[in-house]
Structure formats: structure tokens, C-alpha cells
Length: 461
Image (cartoon, rainbow, N blue to C red; front, side):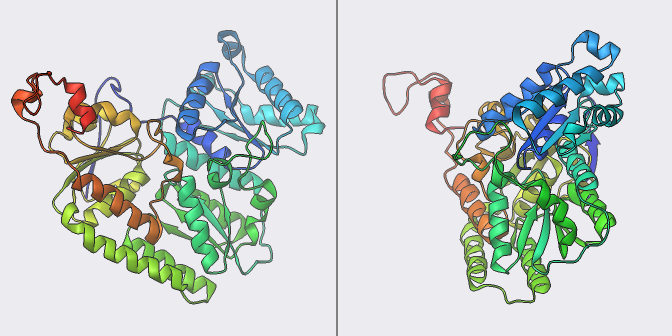
């Protein structure tokens, strides 16, 4: 059992953690025709906007209540009202999702009371869903904001009561560690069993990197509010990641739809558990295509285990991503030499490592000196260069590589591709350069001094 330790430093030197509000905003972006709205200063929204644009390389709908110093002291009702009316008038969204920030939480704005008063004063807004989530950025992290937002959408957008069931409809509540590519893969797996998935939130529809037919100021694709309202008619709910437990329980409480929580879908055993469950609830055989993919994964594991065995890996990620990747690497024969995460989660104690640190990338860099591979998002690239270690990028933000939103790491096919991707990194691990060459001598007998940055670019890390 791992021991979870909090960093005692006075500040984050190279932050790993991202804030709750942008986690909540991203969850709202998985709903079609939605407009996320951060209740706070313009700077809070600008930060999240830049981060998402760099990661997804898409237009990102995100608005702000633009709180000033005076507004913050006097209260933000006028700003919230004006923001909602402006968004409704200019974009006509199906849903406005409001996330609080640190400054408005510190002031103590009663946003839910504001929304009730705004609805009384403006009945023309009755056709627009308005969901508020408390996501102060001075506590918790990205994963918490996502989880709270999904739970709030379930509580406010899914009608309470037991409804007639649709035999082939299932709900999927994915954690924030799943990419749009993962959601597409999961939808294909469910379709193979004749099951139709209602995915909340569904980033595979809105942020999967497609070219839309027409410009939309709101989210373009994803689950609709009508589909969210129909989730009470599903026969099962599949929740993926420990973070989605509260949302799944809230949905069961409101509608009576039972749920199954999968802590991860990366790896042979975890994929087997999913497929066995789908075969059970669908009553049909496992499709030949999926059986073939399992065989391919087993063969990939046989091919790759020579390169994984005994390798030391350092991982910095949100708890559910850390658990998913770390547990799978341990199954492949790797040792997790360092594990750093962003927020508390009960899943952390089950990690195959002595200590899990809730800290930053400086902590990861310090503990990763003897590792063979670093796994974290793009903000870990400087640490990897200083340590001369290869970096495999996973998580948000990944802004210095293309296709991050299409990376698939779940199910048989996704795990197989992950074996190949990381195995290839281990196979191409560069030899250490000659010390004389490394320190400003010449390379291969040439006359030109080789600088450190040139060696890094050449692959020597």
C-alpha cells in the first residue's frame, strides 16, 4: 500500500496541478451548444483559454463575468446577470455552465441565488439550462473540477424518477484522463455489442479535431441536453475512473439506473473485465473483431516485455491517469520509481509504489534522477532535458506534439498501441555520449564543438 504525502514547500516551483475551474469548464465543453462561463476576473479565463487552445488546437468557447476589484467587493450579481444575458442574446446556447473561481469564492457570492433571481426577472431564459458549480481554484485540482461539474449536470439536467428502460442504451461517465480518442474507441467497443452510448461529457463530439460545416460560437458537438435528460432510461451506467463515483451514485439515486465503476481500462485484465461486463449486459457473444484485438494485445505484450522489464519510470499526472498508467506499467514489469500527483484520491493508496507525493514537477524531477523514462504533460519537457531522460507526454496540456487528443490508451487496441509507443521509446534509448564530447569537445572526430542543446536535439538525453 502506497503512502500519500503532501509536499511541504511554500510554493509550486514548476506546477503540475491545474485548477478546478478549467476542469469544470472542460466538462461543460462535452455538451453540445454549451457555453462555459468562469465567474471571476478576465485573467482566470484567459489562462484556461490559452491552455485549451494550445492543447486541442481548436477554437474554444469560454466566457467570463469579468469581475473587477470593485465588483468583487460589492458582489457579482450584476456581472453574472449581464454575462448570462449577453451570452443568451449573442449565441443562443442550450446550456450555460458557470464555474466559480478563487476570488468570487473568497467573497462568498451566492451564485445559485443569483440564478434564481435572474430567472425570475428574465423568463425568456427558461429554455436555456444554467448550471452552477463551486470550483474554487485555491483548493483541489483539475480532476476535482471535472468530477464536480459532471455530478452537478446529472443532478440538475437529468429528471428524477424511474423511467421505462431502453434495452440497448447505456450511460458512460468518463473521467477527465480519457481523451476524445479514448471515447471514440469506447463507443466503438459498445457498438460491437449492440449498445448505444450516452457519454457525459462527450469530448469526442466537440473537441476531436474535426472541421465543422459551419462556425458556432458555442461548443459544436457532444452530448445534447435532450440526451442528458434521457440518461434515466438507460439500463446501466459505466463510470470510468475513481473520480466518477459521485456522479454515478448521483445518477443512480435520481433514476435508479445501476452503475459499474471501472477504475481503469488500460491493461489486459482491466479490458477483460469491461468486455466480460458488456457481454453480460448485452446477452450477446464477444465480437470476433474484439477477440482478435485481445490476441493482438497478448502478442504485443510478449514482444514488448523484454524492453519493459526492470525499467524505472517516473510519472506525474492527475490521480486517475497516474493509477491507470502506473498500474499497467507495473504489470508490464516496470518499477515506478517516482509518483507525483495533484490532489487527494482513495485510489492513490493502491498504487504499486512506496510513496505518492502530492506536489509539483520540481518534486518529480528531484525523484526521477535514476529513472529510464519520464511520463507527464508538456510542462515536464524542461525537467526531462535537464535529466537527459526521454519524455513520454500524457495528459493536459500537451502542446508541443500533434495529435494529443487522438491518443488512445484504453481497451485492447489502445493498450496494444501504448505497448508499442512506450516500448519504442525504451528500444531507442540513446547511449550516453563521450564525456569529453559532452563537455564541449568534438563529435566523431570532427572539428566543430558540440553544444549541449545540439546533443539534446540529436536524441542524447
